[in-house]
Length: 551
Image 1 (cartoon, rainbow, N blue to C red):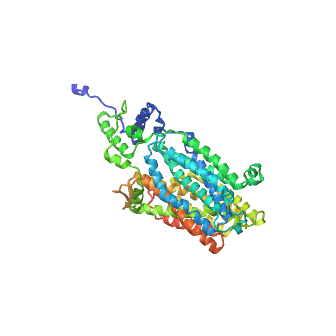
Image 2: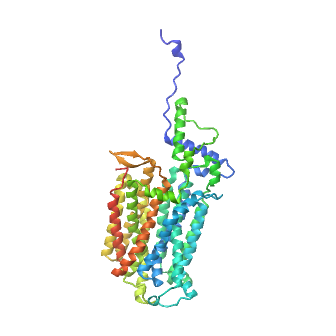
Image 3: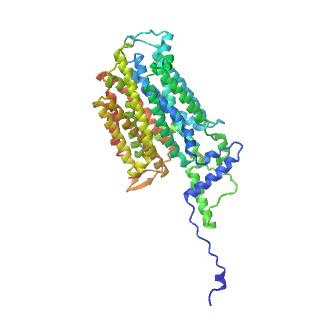
């Protein structure tokens, strides 16, 4: 008989694939973008992908940070030695800022989380820290002159003894600079990610690393020039004063550009309007379940015509509470083994890096060039030392350049090999380079070692943070029978990242307190490169025990 009447009324609905996570996230960001754009102040930039040029403008403060690190690394140790301090006390002075940082940086981060300023949460703190760095930079190269003005005797270094105002002023400048630049770097990275969507986080951090490497190279090159032979150097009085003046200008400009790049949504406004909050994993999962339910009924991805109020549960509010000082140490005490091994590896790696960066120019000036910082003004020994410090800056400039170049390809290297290969290999390369530097005290080895330092530096500021991100994304910190085990312990991503960053403070504290006594006892600054080699080798061994999710 053919088709029945019932068959004639059958309508075939075209099959549509289930909405993907990317489509759902794009839908959520679109709703928030349109809503933020309609407000009195436009906050739509918080919910869109940013161009590479915008990311550079946002993260340009990192150039100022690396300029500051370059000036500190190259000149602070010689400045302290030039104030009459022995190695033992000079290295102990470096311990003040990391001690303060380990104790206070989490408090600064917590204060930033809770700040209710109309200008945002991160930018006011970043501004205050940046201004404090500038004050420290202005003080550091002039401590000796200020001390003489306050009553210190103007005598050669080998005749300096007792209390000197110059030492106190210089130490104050160092603490202001060192603590505030390291703390502001962390606040800056938080600001970068706050005003970017999650998909841009890796891009903005990589951009900051690349331009930071370029800034570091420029900063070390600035220190490698003999400014006393120029009109500018003659006007300002010394190489140190000229370099630090240049750093102040660069840092101030970089700070201004970053702070004026993108507006933050103030905390009170976000509390009143949940659609201005960043999309959290819990928000995404709730929206995904809603969309899949609607899809099962309509067969399409549903986009609301108008943004609706987003309810926030008590559990959501509990998870969004900012990290407190007590929470910081609670997470430290109850950490999973995988994180403990990762932190140990980072601590050892940072101890190796700190041995190198704090005293390398002094090593080049005294050991490679055979100079003496305590020699009389105008003597051949002091001239050799100054030449060595400037040449050491060239080596560190090469380190910064290699950091920027390696940062461009490190993600591809990880994909081609593995995170384990990249981390262990980077640490071993640095260990071998420092060992050869200690054995072969030549100019060309100073340059060769700069490349190995760059590889290691880019590695320890990418792979460990990537691993923590993966642990939290999967909510798992352990494996059993080859499978990830879901964690029952609630851990804050910010807390774990903060503790990883704090390994720098602990490493600097250890090196500052210990290595000076060893240098004085053995009467050679070659100790610093052997120390760097040993710590990095231990870090490579520890890195083999880390839980990697890529095999």
